[in-house]
Length: 326
Image: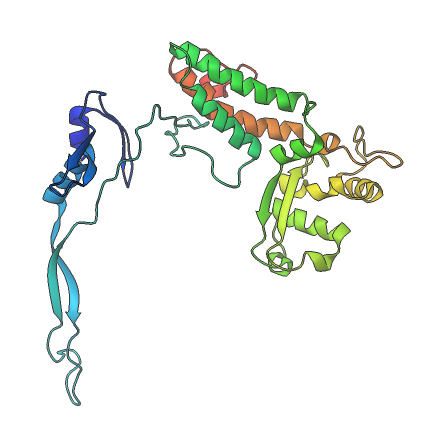
């Protein structure tokens, strides 16, 4: 199938269950037929050709299916010799079947941040990633179609990246606390009870334990607990898994939120936790460098490194190239 594609177009990626390819715009694509009964149906010409050829060259004509098991052993018979053979039905089988997915205007693959690594086969982020990264990708992919040259294209996608960098560099000054937390928080549902996680460390486990501090241990002991958190900048030097702060702390009673933020993050200089009736401002707690690194990694893989290997200067100089690329 790949040889046929290479004969008329260009293979972009040969996957285990399909072929990402580019075909000439003049190549026959879809045909419509009308039956004698007056019904209309459509078929994809490339798809049909591939299916016919693969079936012709790769059908298994000796596929065996058990139709009758061997007769049971009678008393005194030798088990190694059995009591007759099993019966099998021989058929021709072909389970490979192409389906058309597309056409698309472009195919965008992220690069690896490590030198010498091949392109990672990940077309877009899935569930579990930051909403910040999801929305950035949703905007940036469509921008690859802008402009009339390669430079115009990367200027367009760089503008998207800079808008999201501005959000972090200004600490979300144009967003409400709720909007900011929605972009930066991550959520995990605990599949086991807290007792079963004893001795293990993760952001979700730390979040569950800290939820128990102000909600009560009985509220968090069972499986199915939803742990939504942001990563705090304090205490400095602590692993990320130990700096997870449940987002619900920012909407609880101000005295309670100040108490537990001080307990979890420590009396670090510059960490404003509010006085009197003032609650905790999440901007003073969030590890902005951590989230900038997360966004910067996506920018490097989707924009900066692909631009560099195509001979362009860094479209987003606010995120420097890795040392091996400079």
